[in-house]
Image 1 (cartoon, one colour):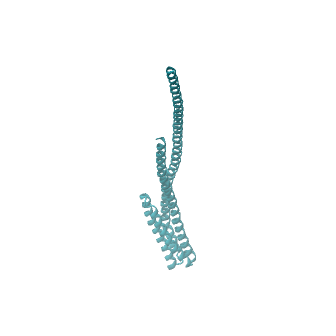
Image 2 (cartoon, helix red, strand yellow; image 1 turned 180 degrees about the horizontal axis):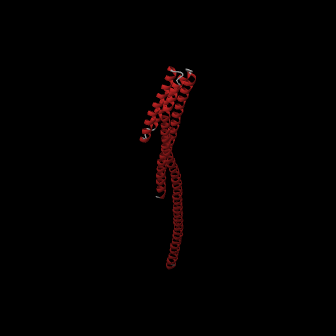
Image 3 (cartoon, helix red, strand yellow; image 1 turned 120 degrees about the vertical axis):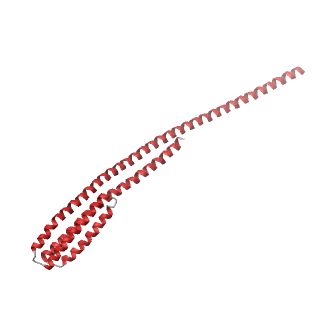
Length: 242
């Protein structure tokens, strides 16, 4: 019974440990997911900076090579924003901020294109370029603010997920230790009971052997007495006949 209890306990503890580890792995995936969102935000910000540098390079030098870099950067911006939206589809608050970021980024890209077109039509129109830059300042500030909000939200989620992951790890270790100790105790009790049962059986067998030995001795003595009694009876009978 004790052995069966130990086996059942080990099975239940193994099941509990398995479920805990599954939850731990799931929690770790969410931690990695938060890091991926933070990396996607950094990538989108980097692509926007590349587009701004390409526009500035073209407006300052008129080198057409910067136009290709600008279009490549804009393409990467759109890809980065789409990737960011896919990553945050589980979070409605982040989706709202993502929509706002996409709208602000589109406005900024439109201003950058306007600046490029102005450079093409009026290469010396520095006042127009300055006006476009002035109009872009609040948009850039809003983009920075929106990205900061998204980073703060993701950092908050990361902190929560990291704490949950640590707690689950500690829980898994504690469950393993407790079940291992309990299993050792039960197996120890089972060993003691089994040893006691073997000792009792050995003692019983020894008692049976002693009883059999006494019975054989008694039987031998009885046969000897019977033989002596027959001899005595034969002598008496012989004497009587004589």
